[in-house]
Image (tube, rainbow, N blue to C red):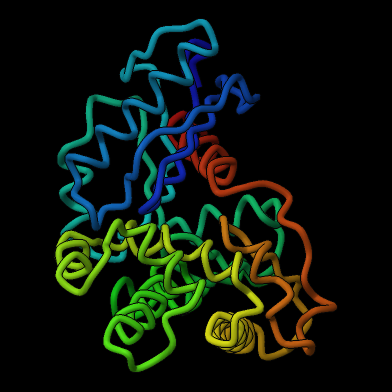
Length: 293
């Protein structure tokens, strides 16, 4: 690979995009962040966010973004939708190289440094994946908002706002948790909440999730967080029936939800070595080698 080329790792989800800029050998030069680039929010928006993040990373490195000198390794939410993935490739600028995988795969690469293991990625959405010793990788969950993505921010937020709806109706107590939820939405009554609901997407619901953590002793929040832990355990069991692989909880909700994972899995939990964006950088390095070969 030409020494004047740059490798870029992209982690794109529903809440934001993280960028790691590296030189031709994959040595890190800078990091940056930008808006959401999960494909479910629109392919054009995804490329805008990626360009903004890459531009910021180049600026921090004292260089100028030139797509023709860049090899991108992208881990993106939503690539399991083949139509979105095809559109993403079709809208790509003129790059030196482009590899696109699910954010689950790049998270797996980053968390265990390419070694065998399990990850449960918990952010706006959720997905779990494993890499076996023979190189085979598997995925569970990650079907997407609103029907799937158990234990994710959007999954938690959706259930929290239903609780707030019930409180407005007098079906459950209107207490501190409910007031915090309503304050976040800016709603003061039923009609105001309906306005928020009609505009809410997965990102909006995910932004409610920290309120469950903040009110973890509240009976409803405690029960909800416990349910999230059970769902995480089911993902781990499905991916590693041998119960031998290390398990990394990744994403913004990985650390807060760790204590809710069933005890049987606690001894196997480990800290991720690196994040999905660095996994993307590994992917870019692999793509650069393939292109050079």
